[in-house]
Image (tube, rainbow, N blue to C red):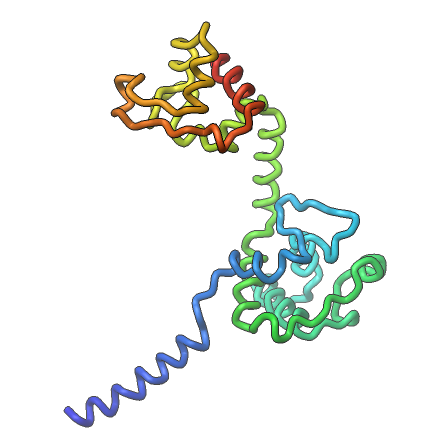
Length: 232
């Protein structure tokens, strides 16, 4: 038994070391913490005249497109290794940026001491998983849909009204169609319910109270929501 324990002990020791060397890191969280001060992380990206660095989507697309590989399956792994190296040891000669971009942004300062190799592995992996053409197309389609929405519907999404009410289906609370039908000629009551909350007004709401939104939604937005609800 003593020899068995001696044999097992090194296994747990080295296993523990390996776990410490390869922590389970959150790439999305890290990219926000370590990179968002200079790189815009939106998808599609926003650009500004005084931006310190190109949007992260542009970086991901550019690196992935320009990295040289003989086998396509190596593209993402090599792109990840490039990011890890460049962030710690940046050099204009390594950069894939054109001359104009380098003049505009300059060479990024080394982040050695600010980010570890394990953290960079997680960040770069997330970069190339998140900033893809597929995700960009989906984000643009959603943005186009939002652009054509009535302002009241946008506000309903913004303030999570749809978490409890659906346009034509009861959820936690009654549907907007039911509310519009009952208070067709009484918009003041809809406004009052949003501002002060309500309870015991709908038999099928299981007596779950609606909270007050007076301190969360501006009077102007409440008025827009009331008008939109009445049109449902």
